[in-house]
Length: 71
Image (cartoon, rainbow, N blue to C red; front, side, top):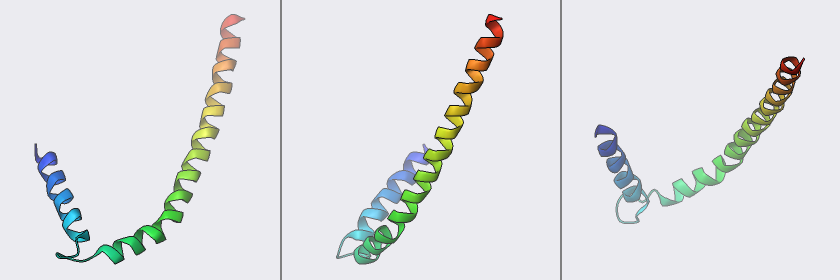
């Protein structure tokens, strides 16, 4: 229940932060999103590469175990 309340409060704050009449943080938020997008894309790419390598290792290990069981 506490998590839902905190989520709603943070959602309301984020909407109010962007509105022109309240905090007017809209331009700063856009600048942040422009600057963080390449970094975020890089982190996703690195995570994807590591996940792919781990998947390949798991498939090789599964084939090895299957070959050992069939012998």
